[in-house]
Amino acid sequence: MQNSDSRLWPFSSQMRIVATPFILVGLLLVFSMLRALTGWPGKESETTVLLGILLLSLLPILLSLVDAIIDRGGVVEYRGVKFDFSKVSSGAVASLTVPPNIGVSGQAVTDSSTTQILDALRQATACKVVIIDLEDGQAWWETRLLVLLAGAVRLRRPEILVFIGKDGGLGGCFQGWGDASKLLRSLLQAHPQYPLCYHKALAAARQWEMVEPSAAGIDPPQPVWMLPGLATQHQWMAFDSNTGLPNPLLAEQYFANELGNEVENKEPPKKISLSRLEELFRPVLYKDSLDESWSAERQIEAFFAFDFDYIAVTQNTRYNSLVSRVTLLNSIVKQHIRQH
Image (cartoon, rainbow, N blue to C red; front, side, top):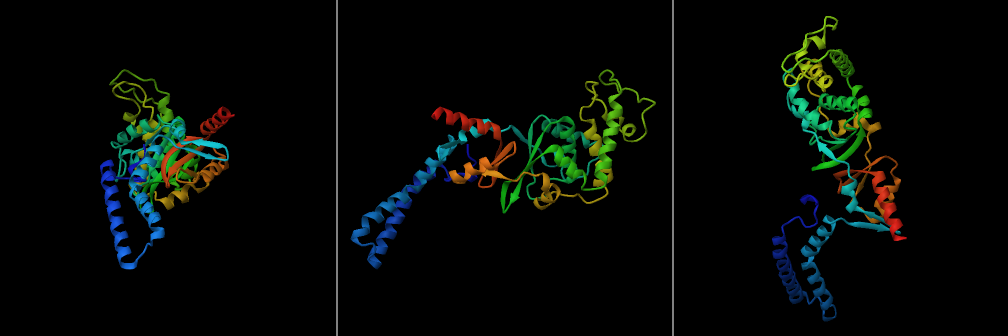
């Protein structure tokens, strides 16, 4: 189903019915006035003009019909190659939009607020693709994106991050997608504290991985061999008090806490605007897309020009989905085989 902002006829069906006779009557009045005042059109062109008026009055109905065809899935054909957009939804990779700043907006992370981040991280790490909506450049801080990327790389999910934002006054515009591991490497270089906090968090979490869990509600004693530092300062984070099991996101919780102490509480937040996104990730960001508003020729040419695994599908620059190139290619080949 199309977004209402991208439909050719964005109004209700009732408005369509009302608009048609109003347009017809309005154009006929203009026709009559022009003829009375200027004598145009003449008798030889009168039929053509009246036919044009009739077609224009039917425009709301025609636009609604095109919207209905698109909703059912349109087929683009160029030089014998069919590109069936009804297959796009089946080939699209399931995705999730991550809450701004992974659940803690507008304030620096503290010991207690790190738990709020865990819910967003759990949801994100269950998906192959997540969407980061930068909105107007105020929604995401570098430190929060860094925590998300660290978890994605360690847990191997999500593999891909798609960035959208408000561009030219229009929200949800596609800005690019990237591989989580490449994005993490780039972002770690943006501030001297980022890699220090990252490796401290990993080292602290690995120490607790060596500790056997106890029963629910009972925290294991701190081993004598544990090195003083991040691991010993936040022992309560290491295990789930309800189950007694290890915290699977301990490294990310430590990382968020350390970034809060060493960066967020000491400096103004580094927000990610569209220009900052480009500065941080230009070499590793895939910005090409295939827009459904393009001509058939341009869509087919763009599809075969791409040489990466996924294709971002947009509608008038607004992000729709990320589609496996292999899935779409298989669909095209199957259609071609059936035709021959």
